[in-house]
Figure 1 (cartoon, rainbow, N blue to C red):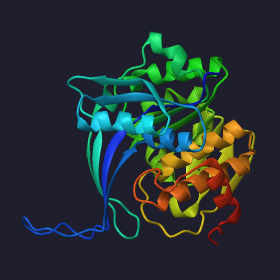
Figure 2: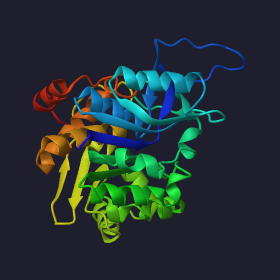
Figure 3: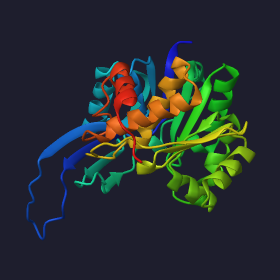
Length: 314
């Protein structure tokens, strides 16, 4: 296949500051120690992290003809990501966030919705976009045009081409379920956060939630649990949990999205399921050690060594 990884969906420009304590009253100023820029989003973070770890990666999404969009494209290209299927049009705004990161790693944000809602993979692009070993959609729930059925057509085509398919979402309630449900029959690995999975289903127990999605066609659910690690539940009955690594957290922005990249690396390398999830968890943990998405991710070798040498939480 032409690519190791195609990352489709939510690309955003982030401006991040650390450490955030409070909004100053009136027109006052509070001083911070660090300020940085990053490409983020459920597809953007994954694309750069995967490329850093050696995957030949295709970015598929939309940005505006603005300063943020120009920077996002240049930053993707800087890390070797193929941007030939990134769409940039006049009148679009680049999805952008102001992220205020606290010392504990939590990061309240101000977000402007943008071109993620407007881009569309047409028939002329479909062959290139689905020509990857792993085809990932990140950001279902934000992709207004693609969420109307085109994501399902894309994933069906990817499966027909022999790709492994992975899906992450941006979901806050059961109202997002119709857009998600359309792609599930063509999804090998469904990788939401546990909070998103609970919001979609209204269920609390991880096993019950996984079985609910498997009944809708998913082969395997992998729920990211933040500081509690990750949960794997396959339709064949394989179930396990991987603990989180014991690290000093700097910023949790993009941790779930970095997990997606690590998972794709594991699939490309032919790792067994537990090693794949552990490697994905290591990628997520490294992401949390820096300010901004992918900041702590350096290379495949660095992540593998981290996985092998870093203690996990009790």
